[in-house]
Image (cartoon, rainbow, N blue to C red):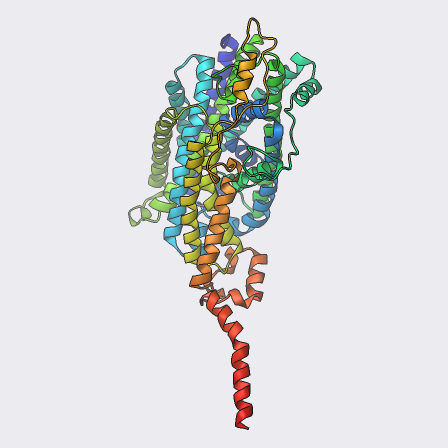
Length: 581
């Protein structure tokens, strides 16, 4: 079954409401300054900003991919949410009190001020732009496949429609249009995921039955404490994945930090993160439950047990087409949720890419220094439009790469975010590290992290699914062969490439910090005069003040050698004195 009239009307209404919000915000803020266009004049309220943050990273990939993960591999990935919560608290307590008072537009202005190096700031911006644009390509492609199944429209046409829609309202209304559209889209996403959870639970006899079926078919793994770094998921791997995913997405990523920088005070910025944390736990929890509800429906006649079955994420499409379409409107709500997830995530990226291009490259240039607010505002709208075109093109490029996208997205995202997290950790918490050390760590970490990510994608095979059955499927005799195919052993790969993708970002952080410390060890630590105390965590600064060994511009090795040699020198001097007497 396809979408009915009611479904199509609800989907159309959802897209139109998003466009109308953009038009309204564009009209209300038609005289906004460049900072007002990008930052809402730093007067926005915490709750809508928190809802925008919540859906800005909960994309259509999350809805389909995480539900498919629960379906095919079990609930261990759910532990990722604990890591996310821990990281959000750290961002609120450590990062926001230092950077929010600076009233920056571009997050990476902090890097320039901390290390007094404009080129390092621009290097971080380039990395963020590259990652952000490719991320938009990933955001547009997977849901376009789902929408093709629901609407019958070609994949490329769906990419264009979604990209053009969010580019339109993002360009007209600026950050306020993005945020308030996200609020509406958050409600649509909640409704769409709830539709699966409620209908799926009712159809099998309740949520307790859903969990019971998952439990008896090995889908409810949460506390696998195995320390093996080569397995797909464990408690520790998922905790690590969630922690560094959140640091990368909410701590060092312009698209999300721009949200809490748009508030009046540090306390309001912290509330944005706390509210967003609660919303994410709710929304992500419902997405995970939806995967279990879908499994409870299919577990006796599993479409994933067939040879050549699609990526697990696409079982969500099959469920909506076979179950939700029976009730007029429900499938339309879910498809609207997919659209909402795409629009919210892409529009967030478009707004942040524009902020980076303007604040880091164009505004400092003498040619634009004398531009009026009107001309600068017009240029920012053009930048959003151009970024939207790039996003659409990259969505078309990603469509040529195949359909196994969830692990690929996490692997590449980890490779690009790890070096940035490492650089910010050094900047915030290690005042003795000099520019040579920080920049060397950052650049080497990028090279090694990207090499690791692509090595993994090129060598690792698909992990086997948990056992699946076709025992109740009509007229089939392929159950044994299908299960054998799905439980085929993973080929041995290189010792490094075989590491779980959950560790990618963590390894990037470790490489960046270690290289930064080693280079600083040989080239000389900072003195207190080299670093502005305002840009460093207070506890780290007190340690820096007390430990004189890590102060000064001399090589730390020379300092240690000199100190170790000084007692013998003193003894020789004393002996010479005694001999003279």
